[in-house]
Amino acid sequence: MTVLERRYRMLLIAYPRAYRAAHGDEIIDVLLASAEPGRAVPAGREALGLLVGGVRSRIAHLATGSPWADGVHLGVTAVSAANLAALLPYVGVLPWWTLLSALAMLAVLRGRLWTAFALTALTGAKAVAVAGGWVLFDLTLVPVAPTFLTRDSLFERGGPFTVALGYAVVLFGLLVLVWRGGPTRARSWWWWPVVPAIAWAGPAWMPDGASYALSLSRVAVEVAVFALAVVGAYLARDPRWSLASGIYLLVASGELGSHADTLTRQHVAYWGVLVLLTLGAAIVPYRPRRHCLD
Image (spheres, rainbow, N blue to C red):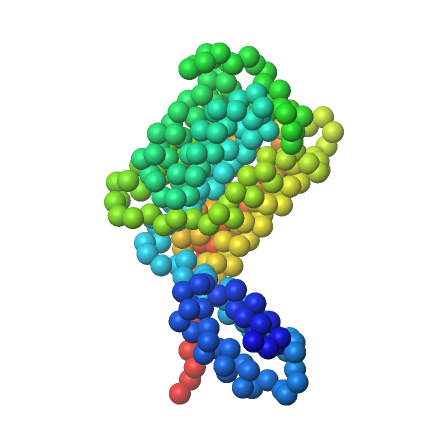
């Protein structure tokens, strides 16, 4: 294998594995046949074309099956990640409940709906009890101090309603998927790095002393994921990403609404960006198609 061929194959990783197995060798042969003699690095135009084509191919692969069912599952996955992120900084104090929350997210990712429902119900009941200062299953001393990632106590900036909303959305979404029947697609492992990024309380960008502070890392991750939803909806002309964004936006709006009397301009700007991106993901799949004139 020449250096040029090896680099072409590295670029082909952008394509799904099944596509590479079916067409990879053919693409490589065409590229090598058209390459200049002695070239060791792919031309910039070729490299960009392979990367863009790989992204398009992956998005087209994802946009299969029922759009609404897959959109509900994707939204449930995102909210499950946020629920786990709320507990992650307190793993040293609540190790078993954090583990149950992680297992619930794992079950959601792998499409094990009934297992995910049971684990989410257990974890959610405990989380709501801690937020309300009630005793459930075992004795938990409140406030629960963090062990890393943040300096706030558990649910210090949110009450039982806010916590219950996140878990209720997941449970309702899982029931909808169970009622639909049929297999549920396994989601990407890349959802795991999202959890600590949302859980981290820094860098701070809210005014000092804000009663409800949003971290810059959380805002950046959420805006990036919503922007990817717009890109996916645009390239695939598919509404599943807008449905998923709307499900997560519902939970985020409920969280902001519980602090309506203390919101700042940063909060409103954050919410407005998520709303605009959600609307964009809902609109772009139905843009007019261009037709070549005969």
